[in-house]
Amino acid sequence: MNRKYPVDYNILISVLILASIGVIMVFSASSANAYYEYHDSFYFLKRQLIWVILGFLAMTFMMNFDYTKLKKLTGFLLILSIVLLIVVLLPGIGSTRYNATRWIEIGGLTIQPSEFAKYTIILFFAKYFDKNPDYAKSFKKGVLPVLTLAGIFFVLIMKQPNFSTAGTIFIISIILLFVAGARLSFMMTLFGLGGSAALIIISTVKYIRQRVFTFLNPWEDIRQHGYQIVQSLYALGSGGLFGVGLGRSRQKFMYLPMPQNDFIFSIIGEELGLIGTATILLLFLYLIIRGLRVAAKAPDVFGCLTATGIIGLIGVQTLINVAVVTSSMPATGVPLPFISYGGTSTIIMMAAMGILLNISRYANMDRS
Image (cartoon, rainbow, N blue to C red; front, side, top):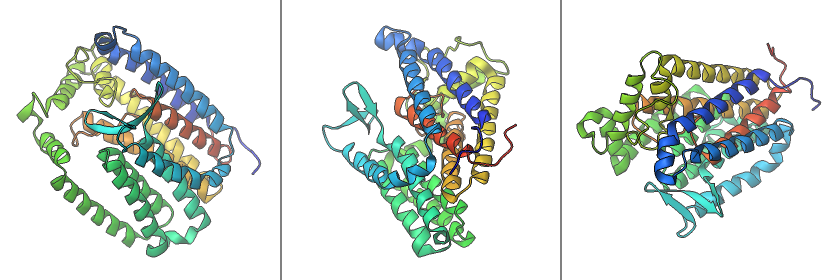
């Protein structure tokens, strides 16, 4: 394919703005905790800056890398993802934090295989339905392979345990199946099966069941299980319309645990108020709309499904993160894209945006 168009600079600028907001808010949210734990208020800021720079380089590379060449790598990437998800569970290799084994530490680097797995499964399904467009209409050749592979990833990630990422991968798989052209009857059946499976998991997995009970009434146990969500609501409520001011959060002073991670949106709400949170959500909405336009105008099925999966993942993660910090759903560990503190997620997500930008170069669309 010959390159015909420039990248969609609206997407590029949106990503850079969100990543910049992330760097600022990670520093603001983490400075107190960083000084207490590491005697360096800039500890998390310096690391996040490095990851954003590496992410930008990865995004730039992928932006100039012909996305169609990724088809040849999908098989290898899929096997690598499964191997890493197995390796992280092996005693002595996987790093355990907060009662979960989700990381592999190599020297000073930490890798989270589940973050890599999210995008691998998008690329694999995009290639599968690009090669076999009619398979989505078949239960045996379309629905069953998707459920089987998504189920393998789901089980491996649940072993960590990491229900939020496992669930996200399953949701993205269903979205890709739908966009590929699956019948409505198949989708209704899958939603029914998914709902039933969720109820079974909630009723049988103790920590998930506890989170559901806490969600229903976080004030019942504000010293233990409901503590984090109650502190999150305090932060959001304190912000009001305009916030208490950048850097002036009170909840980050050892009240809200790890405020630079999954609950950074609470600190944003406290410091920048409703105006600040609404602005960020509008940025995400604009990014998602632009990404869907790229998907709709992509020149092939592989590009369409890859773009849909990438931007769909951004949307799902944003929705879940905001729902959790506002106590609209049970607490679960999903980072806010581009903004939450994190190395693997930041670098891989920005690299994925580079793929989306590369697809936009072949999309015949209005770039205004």
